[in-house]
Amino acid sequence: MVFFEDLGTNVHGFQGEEQIETTVEDFLDHSPHFTTTQGMYDVEEVGDDDDDWQMVQAKGNQFVVNGQPFYVNGFNTYWLMVFAADQSTRGKVSELFQQASSVGLTVCRTWAFNDGQWRALQKSPSVYDEEVFKALDFVVSEAKKYKIRLILSLVNNWDAYGGKAQYVKWGNASGLNLTSDDEFFSHPTLRSYYKSHVKAVLNRVNTFTNITYKNDPTIFAWELMNEPRCTSDPSGDTLQSWIAEMAAYVKSLDAKHMVEIGLEGFYGPSAPARTQFNPNSYATQVGTDFIRNHQALGVDFASVHIYADSWISPTISEAHLEFTKSWMEAHIEDAEKYLGMPVIFSEFGVSRKDPGYNSSYRDTLISTVYKTLLNSTKKGGSGAGSLLWQLFPDGTDYMDDGYAIVLAKSPSTSNLISLHSTRVAIFNSRCSWKCRWGCRKKNSLETFLYHDDL
Image 1 (cartoon, rainbow, N blue to C red):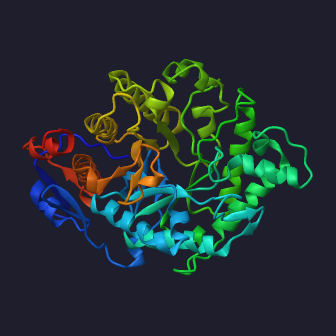
Image 2 (tube, rainbow, N blue to C red):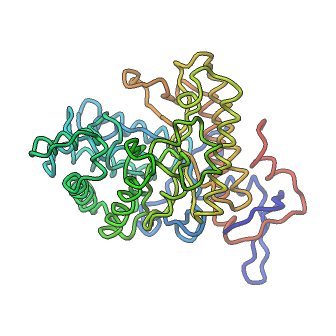
Image 3 (spheres, rainbow, N blue to C red):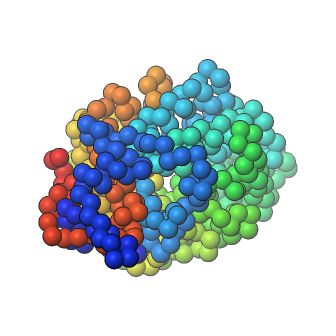
């Protein structure tokens, strides 16, 4: 665990008897990973040496890579595989990664599934479209070029891209008599379908890099499911059993990568005192249980989503910001106290379609998330990062669900993201891990790390 206290103007490192002093400006200008140019984040080549590109691991309540902390500033773009499957839109994948890296974003969450739909990856159980699989290969290889790591989600709770409903359709087509989509979690045949998909993805050899997915450090983590819910069993037992089985199964195939569940973060029956933090009473009844679910063996870090506009009310209000802060603080505390693991706020955003929306409010929401994380980071806490929902390149408006951020069209938001990336990069730097921070002058670095109006 790293504690950041008394951050001052000078960064002191000790190598033998030799004392090194580095000013904030020197540090920013000479970091191998970033430079500050007119307040914008410029990624510099870390080099093609694969020794620099190692697996990220969870260690206590932090992520680490190469013995250094790895706090995450990242984003979601779920449709990358589908865009890469069409030569006319493949360039948008590269464009997006280039833009994301230009503001210092280091992790992207995206779908490694498309079940039985248009341009499906999995056309029927264990039957794959090789061209679509090659498109996913492209996404993984392209991410590495821009030094972006991927969280790959393996199935959807919702109907988009097939989801658990498609697995139930496949089961019924094979002669089963399934009446609920939630039988995805309980029926042995559907569990076996899911495991076969997991195995196909993890054992896939990338046709661009020749690296097997389960050996590729470009993959940050596997996500069991996007937003699992099992409303047919509010006790949580059905989902808990599925999580325990599938986390262990993923680890049996791939002990190197981290695993996370994909939960929204709702508190359930195992922690009645925490349900006060849920956004509404319904959230307690959806079969998920934040603390209990994350205690399953094989789960390496916690995931939480933040959607005040979906969960509390669509109309923008100050209450949304208050909820965001208390929701985050509760989960960071639980990750520290009960789970002993990092937590990533793996989806957060606000829709332009919400009554009362304006871009200034969106910036305030993003700032609230970033500030709450920095408050944890500076104490060495479990707040390990966040992923915006969602980043789009120019010319993809027809895919927009209201939440899309196009950096070129959103300079203030782009600057916010860039500033946070630079702050995170300081915490991730070799200096912050291996050296002591001096405190003779307490102004410059602390101001840069925690204050808004720079």
